[in-house]
Image (tube, rainbow, N blue to C red; front, side):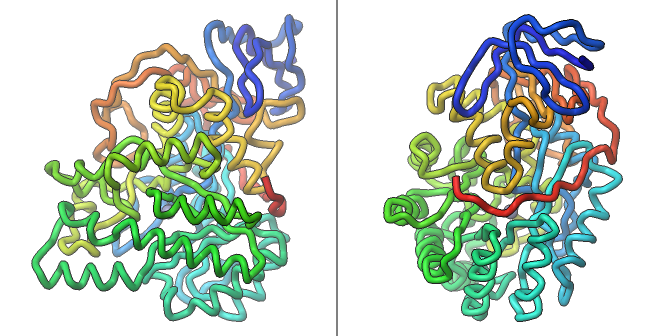
Length: 455
Ligand SMILES: [Zn+2]
């Protein structure tokens, strides 16, 4: 065998088993006791073996509101790998008038020579014309089996809702999942205008410009649209009870709906907007009241939510501080490197998630929902050897200086956590070992994904 990882505990969504793992040709070929010798031996005594994290919501290298994000597919995927994420699915934003294939090609061009981990692409639809709807089947056949819709101003959703409904229906018909950013533009637009008129500027006022009701309202609308489109939907970055309640109800009635949350809403709350330089916390939707953090953990535990994904988008603080009015504040932040360790430390160590549920929401469910399972998202014979060897006792103080994103600040600066990867393997290759990056730029491959099947 090429490589054996010995004496660790192999953790999947269903089991935790002491076992050795054998690797050949980039795949897991053996899981069992006392495997024979291998060219490379790694001792994982006292450590867990997790399937590499699958982060299905990233914006590694984008332009937004006149700013270019600071990461590219090298720094972004190095940050991912250092934190134990071995697959990302990034959103391809089209330029005006661009075809779906054009936007996918442009994205692959950015990633191809840079990514150190495998990556998929979700096409974003910002112009729901008949021509774009006609192109969807080809994109799905090419392995891009999910699309993103924004219910906000940048996508002119309120104006074009009837056309977006057709997009959802087309996705459902051809076996793709529709990902939806659910916030109600009518409420947000009204509140932002009012706050600007009243001189309520800056991050302190930001959470009131996009209230929980705006998220709840949009989620309810998306659910009803999806019902009549007969299409499965996946609601991204949910932050509050108002979003979770209608999903719970619709799922109980048999509708095929999934919910994602984001580390932000598990680890931070809106009091952060009282701090200096609070622009660093701005995301869409905003941080909520502290009570909502528990709601999100409960949602993950009881399957009201199925996944955690970062919405990673690295900016420098000067970019975050450039906007003045509440609607000019630049959303997003670097988050890929801390996704897995923070979820383990705050979730598993604190008793909020079981070890197996942690693997399920960070790797298995996202891989299944987005057509990557069982190649990604589990540890099984035949799966890609995307493996994180994780030391659950390693004490780490999170510091910007140790992070690999090019963002010039760290969201969780000073947080003390327990647990960090010692090795990250991608298709059998050790790409990070004890903090040293060994994987080369461009080794990551574009993933062609299978059609959607329900969990
Ligand atoms: Zn996003």
